[in-house]
Image 1: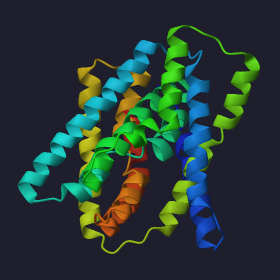
Image 2: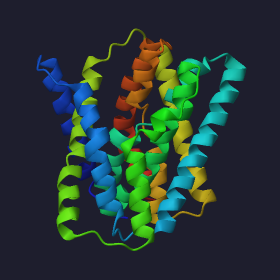
Image 3: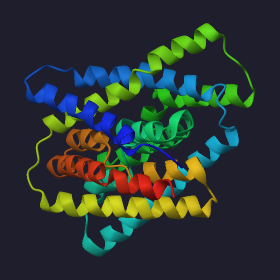
Image 4: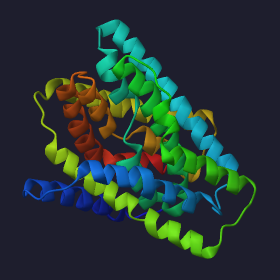
Length: 292
């Protein structure tokens, strides 16, 4: 599978860097408002625009969701075993170690590496991961379970609507698709810019634990992603998307929940920063493995 490595990496690094420099220069950025815009408007529009009438089959989208579930279950089992052996705090570290940044970074990498098909498949994986973050991950970090967060997440309903329309082979009017596409297209650059802002605002207390856990997450995610893709018999873009999404860094939402419930937020912040930088450094190798 041919692609230009610089074409994949340079736009990601430039947009994240722009957000970082913007914040370091003392410019204001409403991160909460931006996150709300992305979650409630841009991403739902993007999901519907890309899934309705997509050349990617509903079966392929279902396989991608299954792959996401298998990766999450496998990573959870690995973290539980590590906790039993080392005493690692599940409340603090299960969510950041299990769930990856499949939105800010993952969708961008999938799109730039594999085009529209990669973005469509990547969104299926992202939605399942997002559901897990706001249910299992939030429940462990907070110490209580709540399904309200998942049921109030617009992107989940957008995914269900889009899959229903795609399965029924329903075509939306052209003006509707153009509107959804126009609004949805702001999602990826805004996600990356917001990630740069987040990296500039996070403060790290110590690097030791962050480095160890970040390296462990990257390696285990890559291995599990490869194993799941092999087990499901995935090839080509399908395989590449699973491998890349499973290898993404710690989700920023992990830090949000760690801060909200005081589950060692400084350590989780370190993991977000270190794992993101580590993933960017490893992107050439990850893209090589993903496209074998």
